[in-house]
Amino acid sequence: MRIDLRSDTITQPTPAMREAMARAEVGDDVFGDDPTVARLEAHVSEFLGKEAAVFTPSGTMANQLALRAHTEPGDEILVDANAHIYYYESGAPAALAGVMCRCLPGVRGVFTAADVEAVLRPADQHFAPTKLVCIENTHNRGGGSVWPLQRIHEVAEVSRARGLRLHLDGARLWNAAVATGIPERDYAAHFDSVSVCFSKGLGAPIGSALCGTREFIQRARRFRKMYGGGMRQAGILAAGALHALEHHRARLAEDHANARALAEGLSRLPGIDLDPASVQTNIVLMHVTKLPAATLVGALDQAGVRVLATGPDAIRAVTNLMVSSQQIDAALEIFERILGNIR
Ligand code: TLP
Image (cartoon, rainbow, N blue to C red; front, side):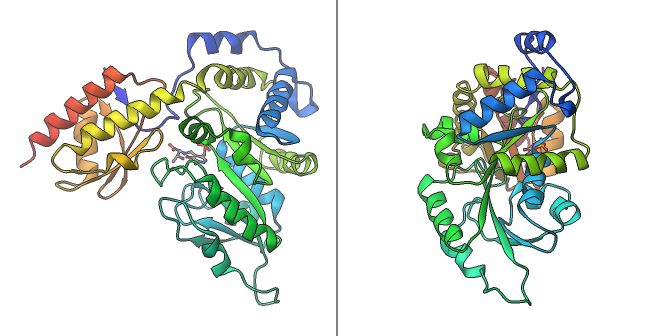
């Protein structure tokens, strides 16, 4: 038995999802002919309270289309130093949009309106024009942390007063909504654009969407084509996403409960530094104090538990659709056995 906690991207489509995908009506989506993609785009934009949406093969592409469509080369964007857009997207802001990233010192990915104000400069030919503020909710490297709605409001207010636009990397916005009871559209209301992923906690095999105004999404569509993301009979994928939204959103609460149980168990083990109260959604970040993270990850892997080293002494475990509460108990026993053997 393998218990895979490396990410919520590892989920496999369920039999019911595969059936929905097999039954999907399709067409050539570059010609605008795919009815299932059209249905997904209409559904997700409506759900988030936006005018329009474009389906993309990945969350990275959805974010990078947003950056490109909001800016011109040489512009500056503001982003938390640990944000996926900056940290994990292969240098795409520089390579594709040609923008400068100004990194903000978020706490678990959450920065303040004062952090934004502190870096803003007057219009002057010496400076790259600042155009966009990016927020990630929930925040991946922040350990699945949830942005308080009030903080988003404050950052948005300061940003708008200075003519900046706002983009939300909502790859795990569903988790924030399920954890807080605040609907996705209430978060989305503060942003000009929102990206969401169907292929993380929701369990679809592939697919994300970028939402915004009709005009903005039309511009993003051109860049999607340019980046090679124009897909043909993509309705098969959109059907998986629609199924995921309908059937797997509410169950994210189970992933959150499993993450809490895992964190509580781990926090009692020698050699693990972890405050269970820090776990707000489905991501558990821990520090390892007695051996290198990579060594522990290797030993766990041998014993059937897969997690990721996210730094020399840091490990991430992400609960997901493929992992039951019994498997969380089993994983804890394996952690305990391995750590008990360390002198
Ligand atoms: N995150 C992946 C890895 O890339 C690190 C993971 O395993 O967590 N925004 C956020 C907040 C993300 O966490 C991710 C993926 C993305 C965007 C990108 O999505 P994809 O992988 O579809 O390009």
